Each structure stands twice: as C-alpha cells, then as structure tokens.
Amino acid sequence: MAHIDEAEINHIRESSDIVEIVSSYIPLTQKGKNYFGVCPFHNDHAPSMSVSKEKGIFKCFSCGATGNVFKFVSDFENISFAEAVQKVAEKIGITLKSQITKPVVKKYQEEYQIMNFTSLYFQNNLMTERGKQAVAYLQKRAFDESVIKEFQIGLSLENNSLYELLKTKKYPNQKLADLGLISQKGLNYYDIFVNRIMFPIHDLHGETVGFTGRIYLDNSTPKYLNSKETYLFKKGNILFNYHRAKDAIRLEKKLILVEGNMDAIRMYASGIKNTMALMGTSLTTNQINEIKKLRVPILLMLDNDSAGNLATFQIGTLLEKEGLTVLVVRLSGEKDPDEYIVKNGIEAMQDNLKNAISFLEFKLAFYKQNKNLQDGEELASYIKEVLNSMKENPDPILKEITLKKLSDDYGISYSVLKEELEKLATPTISFDPPVMEEKKVRKTKWMDGINHILYFMMNDTKYLFMYKSKLGFLNDATYRGVANEILAYYELHKTINLADFLSYAENSKLKKEIYEIVESIKEENMDEQIMEEYIISVKKIMKEKEIKELKQKLKLELDSAKKMNIALRIQSLKKEV
Image (tube, rainbow, N blue to C red):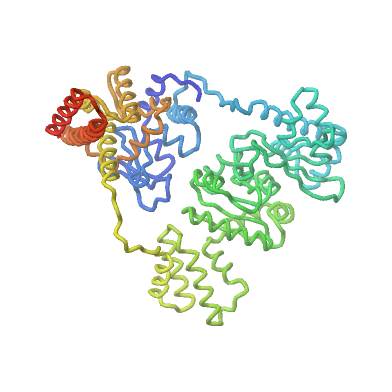
C-alpha cells in the first residue's frame, strides 16, 4: 500500500459522509438515527446492514461485515485500502497530497517483465511486413486496428525468433521454460508459439501471465494453443477480460459470461463491455469468489451446442447455490457470440440480451430434455430432479416460485411438493444429546467478554480508562496486543473513535484480529455498567485460570516454603472469586 499520511486519511474520512458514499453503491433507508440497506457482502434478502452517520461506520448484523467508509469502498470494489482512500477523496472533491502508485509484486517482478516484453514483441511483429497476412486475416474476421490495439493482439514467428531475442536479454532458459514460452528438446531450446496470432491473457490485476495462439496460415491443428499452467498462469484463478470489464460491469449492474476469448473480445469491441470469458467450460471456487465480489446478476451466454448447454446448467447451478441471480441466453443459428455478431449484427445481439430468461426457466427446460412428460413415471422423475436441484438453494423466494410453477403446470398439490422438498432438504438428525464441554463454554464466555471490552475501548476514551484502572492486563498475548494497539492510538491522538482507529489498524500486524473483534459484536449497547460487568466476568475467569495453573504447580513443587506461598495465593484468589 502506498503511504498516505494518517492525518490526511482522517481528514478525508471526517470530510466524507458515509451515508452518501454507501448510498452511491446500495439503496439506504433511514430508521431512527441510522440507515439500513441490503448487505452486499453476503446473500442478504432483508436489510441487515446498518450505516451510522454519527459513528462513521457500517455494520451488518447478519454476516458481521464492518468498517469505516474506506473499508466499505475497498471491499465493494475489491480494491486496496489506499485506492479506496483515493476514490473517496475524489468523490468529495479532495486532492490527495500523497501519491498512490500501483503496487509491484516484487516476488515475480522479472517474470512479469519477461511476459510484458514478450507481448510487446508479438505486437510489434504484427505491425511489420511479416505481419501483413495476419492483419489481413484479422480484418477478414472484422477485427479492426482499434480492437487489435485494445487487446494487444500480436504475432509469433518461426525460427525461434522469440527465444533468440530473450536470450540477448540474458534471461535464464529455465525461467523462460517455466513461463511456458520455450521448450527444450535435447540440448536445444525452441519457441512454443510459432506462426500464430497471439492473444495475451491477463490476471485480475491486468498483468500478462499467458497467451492464446491461433493459426491463420493453414488448417493445422490445434487451431488454438494456450500457454501451459505456470506459477503465474493458473486458469482456475483467471477470468479473461476481467481487468477491462469490471468497471463496465458495475456501471451496467450485470456480468455477461461467455465461453471463449474471441467471444469476449467481439462483445467488448462491439460496445458490450461488461463481458468476461471462462477459461474453459467449468468454473472454480476462486473464479466464483471473484464473481461474487462484483455483486451483480450473471448472464450466461455459452456456445450453442450440447456441451455449451450442459456447461450452462452446471455453471448456473454453482452460481445459484452461491445466492447469485443467474440469467441465460441461448443463441440460435450460430455457434457462439463472435459468429453471431459478425453474421447478425450488434442490434440482434442486444435483442437477445434483453430477452434473457431466468435460470429457473432454463433449468426446467433442461430437465425436460428426452423426457415424455405425458408418462407418469417420467413426469415423477422430472419433478424429483427439479426438487433435488433446489434443496441446497439458499433463496426461499426462488424455491416458492419453483414450487408454485410446478404445481400450476402439472396440477400437483403445492403442499405435496413443499413436503417433498423439505424431506430432501432436511439433514439426517442424530438423537444423541450433544456433549458440551465445560472448557468450550468457559472459553466462549471469556472471548465474548474480552471482545466487548476491547470493542468498547475502540469507541470511547472513558472505556479505555476503565480498562486501565480496573483490569489493565489480559493474560492472552493476542488480546493483550490488541489492547496495546488501542492504548498506543490513544497516546498518539489523545482521543479515539472506531472509524479512525480502523484506518489506523490497516497498518497493524493485528489488523485481522481487530476486525474479527469488531465483527463479533452483534449489538451496539454500550454504557459504563455493561463495561463493568464484562470486566468483572473476565477478571473472574482469569483468576480461575490462574488458580488452576497454581494447583498444577503445587502438585509438582517440592520446596515446602514455596508450596506454602502457592497455597496462600490460591486461597487469596478463591476469596476474590
């Protein structure tokens, strides 16, 4: 993170209105002193996020997400804290004195340098005399100069031209091989990509990590050749065109997901910029997590073949289980969006997008394939497949709609369908009584008490003084570290409030623990009597722990005088407890 002066960060936070900033992302409704909205950080169906103008923080009482205005912008836009500070400053018309620069991943600095240099070399090849045929091919495919430039399209040549060039830069052969640019045969090295039009693949931050090469001179196979997976290029972590499309996706409030790189390029170049492509016909957990961060409905428009149909069902099911809204477009006539736009034009594509169907509608049609629903057994099989697919879905409204539709379409009792779905969704119940260990109960009470004490301290100096005078020490190193961070902040600023302390915590080694404490608090009731009760409770548990440790020590002690002192200490602690 670029260094921004703490005083400048606090000035920007105090000058901003968290309600105005948050409401520019999600709708908020005022209820009393606070404002409420549907939380964008989990699958929320009722307004569970509270935004306090007075305190300058937001908090979801369902998933625990919390923080100040910078944390909200950082998490919502999936950007760094420093970038969030800059974005908030821009929104309220303040120019940052500190300069924010793009962070450099030092670990792979040379690798990124090699990949970017290679991409520039390929681009340069395309603009030379040797690239004329490739340019003609691209123009025939309706890729003009602006598209070529935007997507950094290039050309690989023969005669190991890339390797010979990289060799002059003195890059290690093994590193070039590890990056998937060259391969070894005997004692010789040769280029992986030869006489292919080259499309660079970028990671989520826009760094070049791999390539797709397409033939253009003949019909040799394979038509497409992708970089092998490397420590930079992991297909399961990448969504093609993410770094270009993410801003348009937030603006359009919809993500269009296509199957191939060429489809994404064609869509983007045609003005439909909220488009990304899969790296294959499957979706990994990492990719789903990145899609979830965008917090928009997903429109699936995969290839118009049986494989694309199956992939639409599988991917849609995964996304739906994560609580995302999924829509589907199945093009007719052409195999994919690239061919469709070239042959039918952008207006026809726009019409298809406007008429996208719900994933429920697609799924019902998918299950009907190859079934005779006039036959009782096949109809029953169809109904069970649909219900089984719904059992893990977290959306109660979607379940209700599905059951109602099945009931209306096939004349089956709604109550029967609901009962069957509940049976499928109900996990096996063990009737053995749960065993709750006393240690776990005590630990939970201990953690809850300390979390509240520390949370109170982050909010007001009076609680900080109560901690110093009535407790002063915690016998857990992590919690003690957090308390010391709070005290250090006070010594520096002679005051404390939660919103500014959370900005300060961004540079703390205990940042994760601090946020976990804040997120653990499910109510906002704070007064000195409640603080007093938590201090008493924590002191009692700490003394009971000390008694237990002393008893163990007493058993092992051989010196009679020391045993007497330990016994007296135990007796004294028992009286205090």
